[in-house]
Length: 103
Picture 1 (cartoon, rainbow, N blue to C red):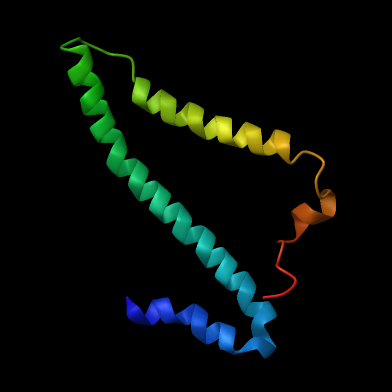
Picture 2: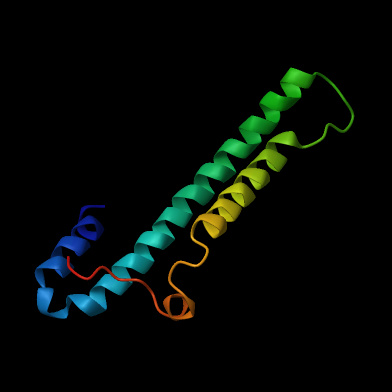
């Protein structure tokens, strides 16, 4: 765990080649965030389903409200992002990743 945690520090010290490494770090950061969100969701959804069934009592086929709320929350964030950032950037900003100008 310690060695992978030191990789950004090592790459940052090599500032003459930072432009190439910052894209890799950005992609790895996005990947790790997706892993954490996926694991958290996969862990919490079954517990939410059990709690929902405990609240409702014994029914044959209850509607999967916890799963629908997670899906609606995802789409709500997606729509808000699209509405709030509509018209920002343009077509050229979607074709290449945004990198910070100074680190």
